Image (cartoon, rainbow, N blue to C red):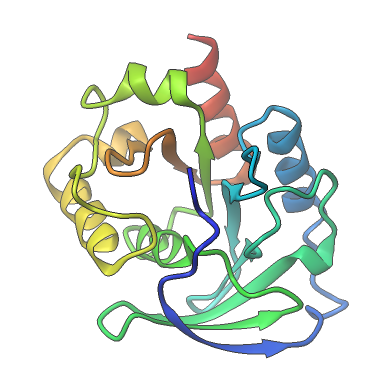
Length: 197
């Protein structure tokens, strides 16, 4: 479940997010996902799971790297992703934390449709096993946080029922699932529905 390693190159401007930026709802749902053990840290303290919300002009706010183990996240645990270059494997971000190792995955999902406003990456081994190859599933040899993952997700969008299901299983990332929706509530409710089914 090791999600603590950032694989891309990045330009990080370490400074607080704007005071005017209201992410209260994003923080609330991130902390709820922690309580539900969908975001957290393994026995070695390696964090897993992340959440983001679209902002504007191709930007999004995402939980920062190495924040999975934090029980009660605050605004300074989130980062603005300003731009992503998948081909160059490069992320530009601003915040008190470096952007999550899954930033490239979130970026490609936002670029699939302007209607997508929230992306959540969780870990749940039981649900992962249940949904593996039953909902859109990435290739087994594709690792998290890579350009290959971004390409794989785009392929699923074009060649599977991902548009309607709004959930995918990361076959090469044991326990990892990604959901998305038109709002934070929509994405959160979707994963909860799958968990309770």
